[in-house]
Length: 308
Image 1 (tube, rainbow, N blue to C red):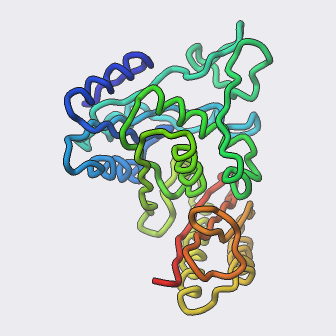
Image 2: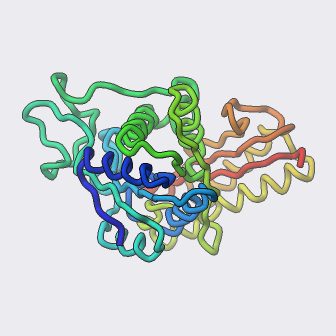
Image 3: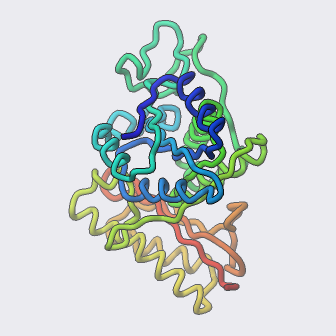
C-alpha cells in the first residue's frame, strides 16, 4: 500500500530521497473521492518518464481556499479509506500526501486540523494566511466569472504543493480545462522546473464526464446531464462538417441544455492555449460548458481543430 504522509517536512524529505535514488517524482493532485478519471491521471504519471523509474505521489486535500463561503466545501464527498484501497489497487502509487491543513490560521481560529471546514475567505484580518498566486488574465471568464476566488485558490494551493513535494512532473485532468491552462501558465511564468501533463477526459459508458460531484445527482438529473456531452459531440461533428459559426454553435448548446432542464452557467468557444473567445472556428479551439442540474454544477469540454 502507498505510504501515507501528513507532515509537510516529511513529504519534502521523502521526495528528495526518491530523487537521490535516481527516480523521477510525479505528483497527481486530487481532492479525494477518487474515480476512474483520477486513476487515469495516475496511469499518465506512471508513463511520464520512460527512461527513469517513477515515484508517484497522489495528494488528497480538499482545498478550502477555492471555495466561496456559499459553495459546497462542507458537503464535498470524502472516502479516504476507499481512496487508499483504489490507489493500492493500481500497484504504482508510492505515497499519499494527506495533510490536515496547509494554511496558517489566525490566532484563535479553527482550521481543518481541529475539525473545522472553514474557507480561507472567512479568515479575519490578522496573522493568518494572506499570500495568493494569481494568473490574472487566464483566470478571468468562464469558471472565473461565476467563481471569482476559485483560480486564486487553485494556483495558490498548487504552488504550495509544488514547493512541498518538489516534483519533476505533475498531471492534471483536461476536464478542468481552464484550470489546466492556468497551472501551465503559472508554471511557465514562475519558472517551476516541472513538466505539466494534461490528461484526457475520462467518461462513463454513457458519455458523462467523470466527476466526484456526480454522486450528488439524482437518477433523473443524471440522465438529463447527458445532454452536455451529447451537445458537445454534436457541435464538434457540425464544426468538422463546416458549421463553424460560434454564435450559432453556442446558441444550439444553450438551447439543448435548457430544454433538458439544465441551468446554463456558460458556454464558451475559446482558443485552446490563450482561452481567448473566437467568433469563427478556424484553428484549435475548445468548447467549454458549465451547467447546473439540480444542485450540482457540472463542467465539460471538447477540443476541436478543423485543420486536422
